[in-house]
Image (tube, rainbow, N blue to C red; front, top):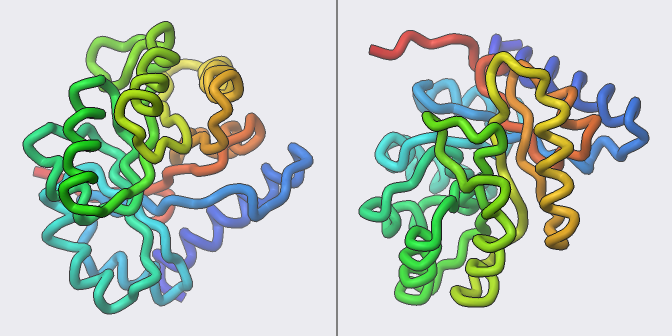
Amino acid sequence: MSDVAAGLAAVRSHIAQAAVAAGRAVDAVTLVAVSKTHPAEAVKEAIAAGHRVFGENRVQEAAAKFPALKAACPGLELHLIGPLQTNKVRDAVALFDVIETIDRPKLARVVAEEMLRSGRRPRVLVQVNIGREAQKAGIDPDQADALIAVCRRQYALPLVGLMCIPPAEADPAPYFRLLAEIAGRNQLDVLSMGMSGDYAVAVGLGATHVRVGTAIFGHRDVP
C-alpha cells in the first residue's frame, strides 16, 4: 500500500468513527482530498486507491494538473477551495465541478455570466469568513444571508451550501455550529468544513464535506 493509500484509509476510518459517534450515516460525509502543491503522480496514487473527489486552491495549478487526470478518469470531481479572482472565472467554470469560494456579489455576477456564456454550471458554495479574520477570504457572517439571497434570486446560481475555515488556534466547534446555523436558516444542505486538524469535530457537527490534504498526501515544501 502506498503512503497516499494508507493516508486515505486512515482518514476514511476516522471519518467513519466520527460519523457513527454523532449518529450520522458514514456515507453522509464526502472526503475532498486536497492535492494542492502535490504532483499529478500523488493524485494518481489516490485514484488507484479508489478516491475520486479532489480539491485545489489555485486555478492555474489545477489547470496544469487535472485536465489529463480527468480525461483518464472521467468520474473525477474537482473542487476549487481557494480564493477566486474574477479574471480566472472563465478557467474555473470550465475546469471545476464545484466552486466553494463565492464571497462577494461581484464574483457571483461574473460567475453567473460565465455560466450563461459557456453553458457549464458547476455547483457553488458561499465562503463565510466565520472568524471575521482580516487576512482570510469570505463574507462576514452577518452579511452571509444577503449574499446567499443575491446568488439565488439575482443570479440564479446553483448554490448548494457554505464553506468556512475557522481561526487556526481556536476551538473550531463554535465556528462550525455558526456555519450550520446560517445554512439551516437558508435551507442549504452542504457544509464544507473541517481540515486535517479538525475534520472529526466537523463531522460531529454536521459537515457534509471535509477538506483534507496533509493527512493524506503529507507535507510538501513550497518555495
